[in-house]
Image (tube, rainbow, N blue to C red; front, side):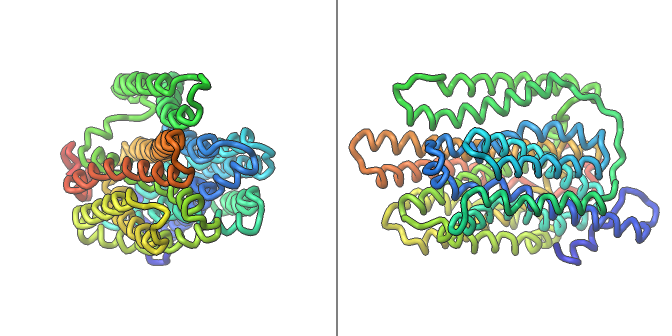
Length: 497
């Protein structure tokens, strides 16, 4: 994080002059949150290049191994709605300590796991800590940073939200080339413990907790809704690779998830009349917020779908080793990180349209080009495509983070960040599950028809990319309608423009 960006983090919502000690406190709090969130978000995708080694080492299928990513994202989606409640009830320092302690415990479990079951459990524990960190960071920044500086600050946050997951495969590739897969957690554990110790000494309280009721029925409905939807999508891949072996139809958990989601929404609409909702859905009355969330969902589906499929293609079709794959994905990830603060400044100057429209168009164009890859595709073309994809996503993430939450009044920041985080993680999990399911269904059908394994796998991966390409067209259309919010949404209409 740059010193220039840190100097912007000195706002408190009061008309009184800002004391130097308060400005320093604000800079320290957000710097700690940024560093810690970067560490925990790195774990979202660090396992993506380890899928094949884990399949070989633990004797599991691709659809089973992908649960290391899906379970992580799914747990975040289930836990994040509860963080809206936690952020209102618990002060900054204790909730930070809770999040990092949980994450560190999960990392330790993963490091000593003898098999897939305990490894998945450890990932779930890790995700629980990660789920608390993201809304904590977003809500704190929205509270402390004035509207005119949010674009620049959100540019730094976009490094955490997008680059940390994007460089996960690169770091994983370096580790797998020289060490056992467990070292991906052994090396992160001391960093997590260091962040925990630093927070114990340096983290300060900046929020004002208030008494808020927790509706346990809403928590149950939330878990069933998000869990059922993502589990149902994931089960399609398993069903395709286990034809004739019986088991539960994927449509059952998917149907349960969709029905429960309707019940969850109805429950929140009823509770929010009495200020008791787990997630206050009045955030969606602000059109700009809603459009931003839709675009963020599409971008996350594209990002995580590519993160999971591209390493499989490079490893099993092009026959690159994990280190080579990591090096292939590194340039785009670095460019995305470098562009974050720049795009943030451009957002403060230009607004949304001049960034979102070309960004969405680039992402869509790359996804359509990936539908043409096969065994003969040059790795340089794939490298160029990945770099272009990262540029497009960089143009989208910062404006979407900023425009979405800036469209809301301060009273809805915690709910808005929790909903944004939930949708973001469910979309990422759905993207992973859907892309893998389509890949498995298509490749299994072709192998049954007599095609060789590599040709069938390449065709299956193209099918996954085709799904992402079609979805990306909706983001291109939505990009024209997202606007830069006014400096004071409290005084703006419910349209959020």
